[in-house]
Amino acid sequence: MNKHRPIILAIVGDSAAGKSTLTNGLVQILGADRVTVVCTDDYHKYDRRERAELKITPLHPDCNYMDVLELHLERLHYGQPFLKPVYEHSSGSLIRPEYVRPREFVIVEGLLGFHSAVMRQFYDVKVFLDPPEDLRTAWKIKRDTSKRGYTAEQVLAEMKKREEDTLKYIRPQREHADIVVRFHADEGVKPENAGPNLNVQLVLRPTIPHPDLSYLIDGTHQPSTDVRLRLGRDGGRPVDFLEIAGNVSAENAIRLEDAIWQHLPDLRPVREDQFGDYQDRMEVKHSHPLALSQLLITYHLLRKYKNLAQMPFAPPVAALSRLQSTPSSAENEQA
Image (cartoon, rainbow, N blue to C red):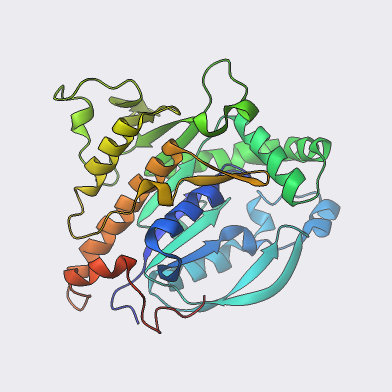
């Protein structure tokens, strides 16, 4: 049994913004036996048929049991189990609930995770996925036609129905994120043709402490064109922009990895080729910008884990080295 509360990460974004892809890499780094994943979309009040009859989209708060989600986030925060509803995306049905026991790390992903102040107070790290709409559209068509049985025309029609709720309920949540992740294609390149060469821009807000990446701007190394850190403003607030090109060289990717890992000397690095994968229809591909984004987010989770481990009644720091080791029978219970 854990001796301190779980570390909770929230990943929020519109449908097909890449939430599950980002989550899968984090689970690979941390180890599936140490992560509990909770999808906020499971808290839908209505199935697909009922939503069509009521003319309400799953993006609308009234279509979800937000109060129950708030209660369950509180239980997650204190490491308590609960019975979670389940929504099956492939059929659009509400099915048998599942028993959830939080492990050391909890990833909460979905559409409305930042909707209320009550929800936001329980997260240690908050991430918002913000791809351009043309890229998200391409991703959604690929996913929903290959996995959910829709035609491209049906996907586009459904997205049009959701536009108003996207602008009213999804987009405003961006303001509450500690990190905003924006994958994008080079100018003039069609999103569906960009593949693993998508660039990424990470907005690093000062709401949480980020690793020291000043080597990217202090002039001690040859200036890089494929990994850059610059100061700027986002929504009027000062932020750092970390920009990673889709064709980032192996040398610069490794240098950035090392700069992140050196802030966690008690933890064993995981090789970049062990994460950073994504599904392109039926094919698995690898993206360096995706892998580096996942690593940066993992840094924050491990940093918070280390901080808690140094508090009274928490596991000793030496226990952190077991992140890649075999779990005990209690830790290996299924969520």
